[in-house]
Image (cartoon, rainbow, N blue to C red; front, side, top):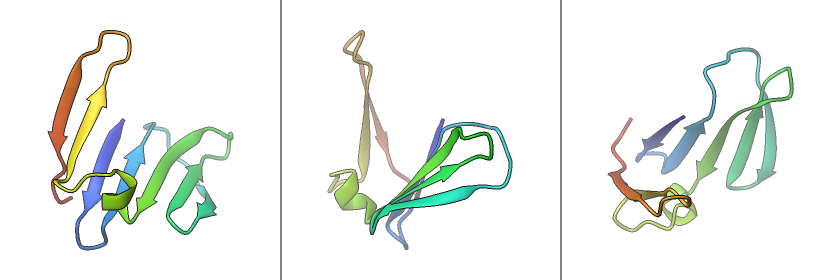
Amino acid sequence: MQITYDPDANAAYITLTDKTGELETLVINDDINIDVLPDGSLYGIELLDADRQLQSDDRTLTVLNQLTGEELRLKLQPA
């Protein structure tokens, strides 16, 4: 999994797989697009207005392992 962030566009993209192929983009609403591979598997999620979507004023992403309770804080950097 990879998360990229473009501060100029205020957009984040979460890539979920290394598989490649022609993508179909499903527009969920004005702020969320989902890319699906031909086999129906999820390729990635685009978050527009990412600061609000990620609820982060300081552009920090927190990854929480719900099993262990461990927390990892990542500073979002320009792509």
